[in-house]
Amino acid sequence: MRSGTVAVIGKANAGKSTLVNVLVGEKVAIVSPKPQTTRERILGVLTREDRQIVFADTPGIYRSRNELTARMMRTTENTAKEVDVILYVHDGHAGLKEDDIALMKRELSRKIPMLIAYTKIDICPKERIPADVKTLYEAGVDADVLPVSARRGKNIAKLEEAIFALLPEGEKLFPDDIVSDHSEKFAVAELMREKILLKYEQEIPHGVAIVVNTFEKREDLYEISLDIVCEKAGHKAILIGKQGKALKEVASFARKDMEKLLGCKVFLTVYVKVREGWRDSARLLKEFGYEES
Image (tube, rainbow, N blue to C red; front, side):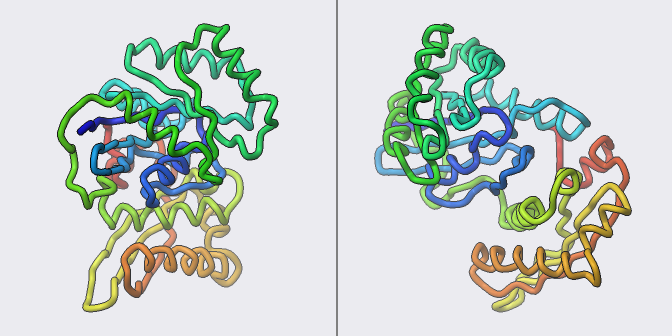
């Protein structure tokens, strides 16, 4: 039996959460095309007869612009110090740049076994893959590179086996029926935020927090009340939309996924509130659940 923890590290929007979801076999982290989708460390647990791999999905490496993103980067840094394996996720479609190589070398300097998942091979030029692998080798990046496509499921089994080979022998860290360390209440908030990321453009989704006020099950129905917190009155108007149309659409979109998650009907009530500068307020960050890791 082998078991251990794997830090999933990489630039923002490299496809880390999508890859973790595919490896675990269930949706444990929300996904969107926008950077900063993942704000906290989220554990996804893959359990088989001979192994348990605990993936720690981390916020994408991103330049800190406020206290929230600074905390996100500290979460990523701290997670990478405490694991058995580092899985560095590189977006092959975006190309290989000098800062990519520098980030990989920084992770290698931790002296923790590391693999590189070269993602999105279904949409990048085929000839780029061997050229980038050669560049990494010549630059002194001493880690195995595994080209994968999470969307197509290509080489996912090979990646799992490569991770398994690096794990230490040991007992399971979680019971067999656990796939994530977060609660259903957390998952509900994240689903709401995911739908906002998918529906609205530009800065508005990044300035949004979700606060779940009521999460109660009554017979075969969940009653959920939550606040969408934004930073500006103008953002509130956009979130609500003309005659509340935009808010109704995004709430309906989220409710359907909540019902799939919870396995029963959901009565969802949504409010939009303004808290200026909340991403730089230690008090509000704590109130909204973004604790220091």
